[in-house]
Length: 83
Image 1 (tube, rainbow, N blue to C red):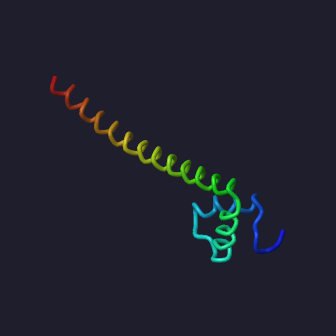
Image 2 (cartoon, one colour):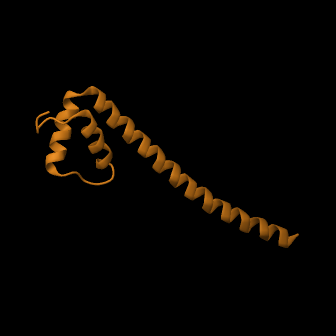
Image 3 (cartoon, one colour):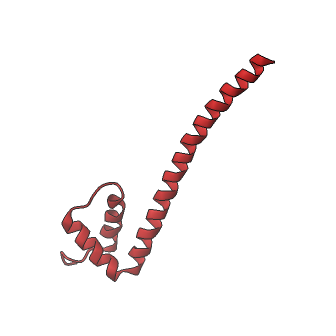
């Protein structure tokens, strides 16, 4: 494989890395070129992005639920003390 065009394996690694940190200019260009030519990796990149967004939303919802549980417990204690 030449130095300009990446393999699909290397492209998927860069796709995952790009979601955690900024890629080097060289890697961004190589990945962009590969994604223009490879529909499979392009689909993988979209699926990976969707999965990461779903995980982030789930974790944020989970944090919100924990806060609501604490508030609900406090409210239960107040109601019980009033009874």
